[in-house]
Image (cartoon, rainbow, N blue to C red; front, top):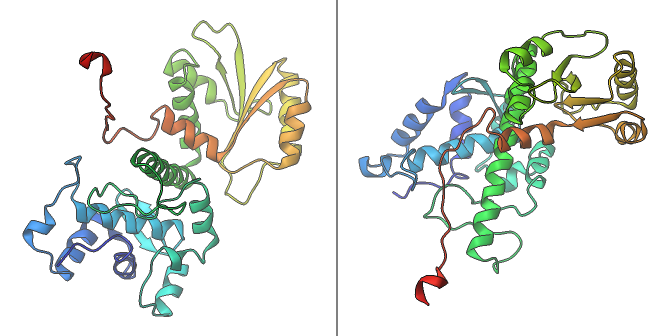
Length: 308
């Protein structure tokens, strides 16, 4: 039989998770047995050569179920069904696909984060993505839109991992990110600076440059997605900057800022940069913090000078 597409695998993956915590690798193996895939079908690789086609589709099915809050990661490589996922199975749906998942607000929000959404965009080179914006997109546009979708999924996965990690991990993450961006001088110095949690109303201070000519004071709030940072928190941070005689500050949160909080930061006399969850994960991807390059694709064109 042909290897099922990732949407066809959503319901089987959810049923596998219904037994309790499962390992993604074992789910791939069990589903391959259940679907009676041939030995040749099981070893078909993606163009990158780093993952099988079937495993890639199972992983994407699990990723989309997680975006709809039907399953959740428990630890590295493991996941389990959620109460919402159990409710879905109780209703005995004959199929779960993107249209089915669209009933959940979290999934719709995930889809809206990508300007041009391609529901079939995976690393699978054998199935052509179907653009929602029409069939007139160029191959270059298709590839770039698929890339944006993959990064959007990665950003949400990063945020989920941050929220499920211990509080001190968030501080270490900020250290790694700022160092990756060129702040802080050495890792040892940066770690000591950010270790003084709650010191005078700030969560840390880091050198702006390797020489320590200027310093940036930091406030870090690991909030859930529905807990927005208020204008009051910005004013409190401003007061802390004033006590430290600091001229600039960085406020980082895993959630978002209310409109009044952004307006307050804009009109205060000290420079306060606001980094919300979306910006945080975008910066992590840009500077390879908590993620790595899986594969590099080269787009080539004719060298006109060669033919002259």
